[in-house]
Length: 119
Length: 116
Image (cartoon, rainbow over all chains, first blue to last red; front, side):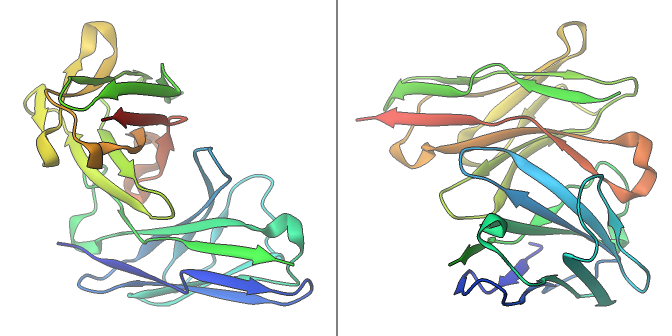
């Protein structure tokens, strides 16, 4: 089945550090990937839609300069949390859609998430 | 506008008893509906999906869901709960307005507790 690999799974760093999270589709190509944020005991909140070869589309209230997204290839999207602070601590999850099965009936395939803790 | 409401934030059952997780949706279009499961500190795994074919959808791990248009519901069921079913469950609708971007709209989630 379709596999999405997310790395790292855990990261702890000091305040002010920039952190990069990778999302890879392992056995399919993805023109579109999604980045979500999840707070404890809450649902997923869509942050942005990552489009291969073009700028990401951010949801209202998400700072573009804070959460940099790059989707340079059909199998890789990265999310960089710039100058991270404790309030950025959260669980970040990516998902991807198979570009050869692009219709709304096809589900997104999710990575295992990244637990980010800013000290 | 499309939306999803999961009617129970927490459901507790005993092992071996039936599971019912309730979900109602609102959509101006014929919806695509999904149920995902999330185990602690993990991503989401697809349990099943409804895509306007059969209204009774069978998924993995013995789960199934029935699409009822008249009730705008898509409840998830399982005849006999297993300890490994304890997790967070999300009912999800695909935002048809967004064309092929496939943006998802999530319910708030239901925590399933399974007691021995």
